[in-house]
Length: 104
Image (tube, rainbow, N blue to C red):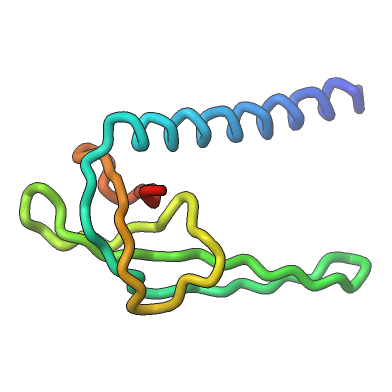
């Protein structure tokens, strides 16, 4: 029974990773390029059961979409060292403007 549960959890994790990679690749391939700036960087700290602390940064950018509206979105592939106000190039899909990738 434990192996079945382990297999289901592993399949869900792998499925999530594959979906995320496919979505990012679609945006890189088909997305609309826009100028953006880093609106905020949220830092989250967590401590595991062994007392080890890890930090995760979530980078949010603002840009003007093709429709002229200002959008704040989480960046899918932020590079290290981004701070508020940094100007970057991003790509987004008009139907999913809240998920953007940084142009290399």
